Length: 139
Image: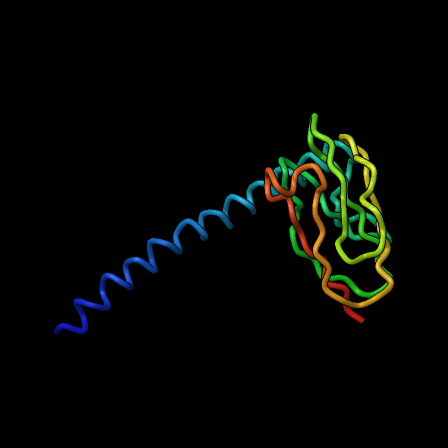
């Protein structure tokens, strides 16, 4: 019986700490849904309908989706669908400087020619808003 008393508080603590993470995933999904709606309003088609590129939207200090996997040779286009905020893209370990800022309805593109997992961030917002993403480039 003593084992159950010891395990129960630990199990409850694990459950309580996992609930916010689940809610955060729902929040991220909803936020990315809003970003896609803004994209369609701005460009008249879904981001998935863009030919020759993979689109990541920048919206409310988030990358949507924050993690992507693409084959070597893919061009990734980050599109700012915010109403007022500008964003940049700095792909760590890519050997390129931080991009210029993209204002609403503007975009930034990089073509990935080598396999690997690369973190990227928004220069002005990665520290204050945790605006960070990752692209995994597969051979």
